[in-house]
Image (tube, rainbow, N blue to C red; front, side, top):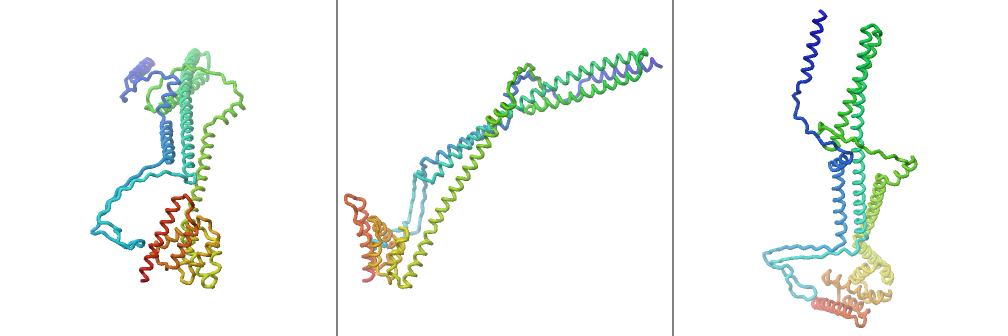
Length: 433
């Protein structure tokens, strides 16, 4: 009976050995990889890492943005073309010459070419360029940080694989040693030299060693999978590493390491650049707010002119015409011309009195001609609805500031103003006759 059991056990063991030796129906085997050194592993990880590639592309984008900001300092060329066809041309009477002129031709072609050169934008372009430079600096530091992280991860993965390989070897040696001890304990038990308890204890130790070997093999598979993932290779790719690693002794103290980290940590440099970028954005926001305030002030000029008109009406209603020049003295030049035009347009106001008031106000030699120019423009815009006395008074305002000697441009301007006033006076005279 004992022989039969022994033969059956041998047969089962033989079948198990044959089954273990049969090749498994698995997928195609991964090609063998050449052993990698630490340097090769780091270089492969740097080439394959997507974060490093993205950081490199962000540098190109930041450099392009910097060039765009720089190009805004340069002149820009623009051109456009349009064509309009009408059923017939349209004519209108010129307020200056009294002749019919073509205002809208039958066929109108427009080809516009413009060259724009920013002269002063309130330092907005400089702020944008400096912000683009900070963005480029941040992108470059971010690339360095990404490379450092990849190098650290590659080195950790490399040494983790070597460590788990050594742990697997130790576990296998432990299983072999405890197996030998278990066999010795079994032999001693058979001959009656040791009790059954010693044999059972050795079997428990062997089971624990085998469990530790299985755990070490699993850890090795996980370490190899992480290593392949870092290198962007298939997870099941065989991993072969060169174990020749040089070790260097580090003699730094903890305080030295902390000081070196505080001085060279790229995360701190990126945080400083982020603060600088945020401050630049705040400065640009304040600048935009200031520019918007100026735009709102310019948009309020029409409301200011209406307020001036209401002030004039109040002065007239209270019969305080004598205070008109002093009141006009508190208005800016553009509003001064508008107010003077309004005063001329009110029938109750003596135009010559307004002119005399403006002169008594103490206009500089250039201001009367400027005010006169604006008055002529305003009169032309309103269809020349001023009487002859007002037009003559305006001409008197202009001639209170004669053109400087040897100033051909001023003399030409004065002659043009005289000609425009003469045309308006002629039109007004024709209308009355």
